[in-house]
Image 1: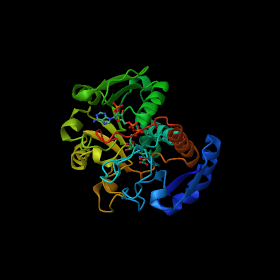
Image 2: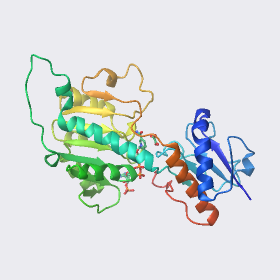
Image 3: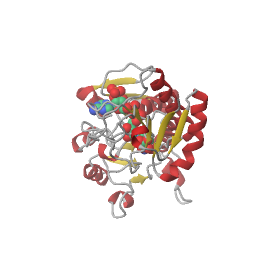
Image 4: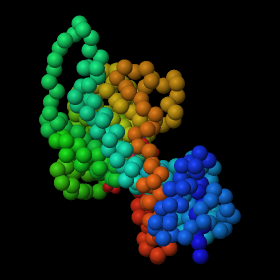
Length: 310
Ligand code: NDP
Ligand code: OXD
């Protein structure tokens, strides 16, 4: 018998996902009825975006799992009506997008590209940037995205340190964890990349004290979540020149309000939450595989853990 899959996201997402999901279900051998509307008590799986109108899960009495279209789960994981497994999005297309975005912005700051691009005929001042192996990059978060970004930066020759909650051993990467590990990870970070989730433990993680631990002239790149950074502390460090530049893709309020100082600060680059987008084709494969697993009685992949918040 067909499983009923409810697609609960913004209406414009349906056009993007309907065909790739149906194709992926067929390839995975999942007999599915996919729709944007069906009686809640008949739904088996919910493909979900946290900005969808669906916020109360209690009527979905038969549902086996919520399959998130986003990597971040902070807007759903604490939902008191959610009593079934929640899978985060781990999508190879999204991961590649993040790796490319992070690499591009690391390279911009590593090579000092801005100074070259804005040079005029009155200032012919050749400079030699360091080579990648002379540049220390720290990535906070060694999950699906942080790890992939770290591996690519290592392959380019960068001296990469990564920090995570649990201990890890990853080839070519100095892996640190815990509070002591964080201090070390920050002290060496000429370029700092934030790829942590937004949880109770990570909110304001980059506060004034920790920003102060970064080497003078460090660059901060944040494609993680806005709440990871104490914005006032960052602005002070930018004003004072302790931080050379911040490239920020994510913010506490999105879109970033017009009056926010980040827009006009000469040492800040704002990008509109575009570091990495879930890609319909590859994400649909991930969703189909999880439904196949659910129907085969296998464990779901990439389950979020409410006790950790991610
Ligand atoms: P994962 O859940 O795979 O990885 C999270 C990483 O953060 C893990 O290494 C985890 O440690 C670490 N971590 C979590 N909490 C702590 C803590 N308290 N102390 C130290 N380390 C911690 O997530 P992803 O890599 O898939 O995604 C990361 C984030 O990127 C998402 O949550 C989302 O906010 C953001 N994102 C942004 C996008 C954009 O376009 N800007 C697009 C997609 C995602 P451990 O390994 O020990 O569990
Ligand atoms: C995500 C995001 O969490 O786009 O997937 O930020």
